[in-house]
Image 1 (cartoon, helix red, strand yellow):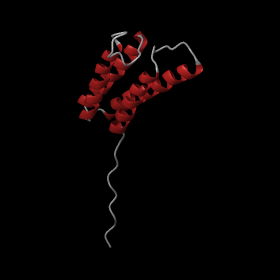
Image 2 (cartoon, rainbow, N blue to C red; image 1 turned 90 degrees about the vertical axis):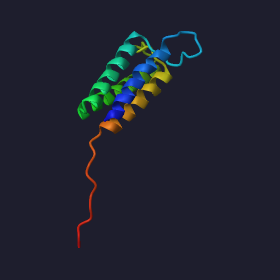
Image 3 (cartoon, rainbow, N blue to C red; image 1 turned 60 degrees about the vertical axis):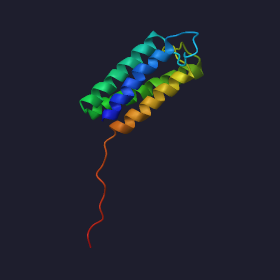
Image 4 (cartoon, one colour; image 1 turned 180 degrees about the vertical axis):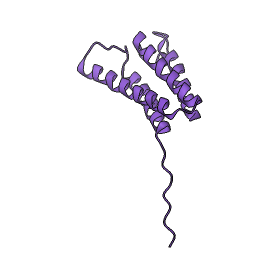
Amino acid sequence: MKLAVGIGVGLALATLLAIPQGLPWHMIGLGVPGYLVVLALAAAAITGGWHERRSLVLIAGFGLLAAAVFQLLELVIGGQNTLGGDLSTVSLLLGGAVGLVAIGSPRTAPQTAPQT
């Protein structure tokens, strides 16, 4: 579960790549609502990973997945672009979502063959 902390910190730090408009390291498009969504879900991932709360990590993961789908639909349909993002934002959100859902998914015990 400590990997969720790393993903959350990485997501929070990735928002710094959206700040410098026009500079070479401006790689992610985000508006103010996009910052709030990413930072809130990153905080949920960090908290869930730190306290080993699988449900909170899954909430953060599915929240990022929903935000990625929402951003993609707004880009495809041509909506208002509420999050202020672009396709790089979709990839950031989707990458974080896949990682957090994989970490937060319950694992089953390995099946053992019956002794004969």
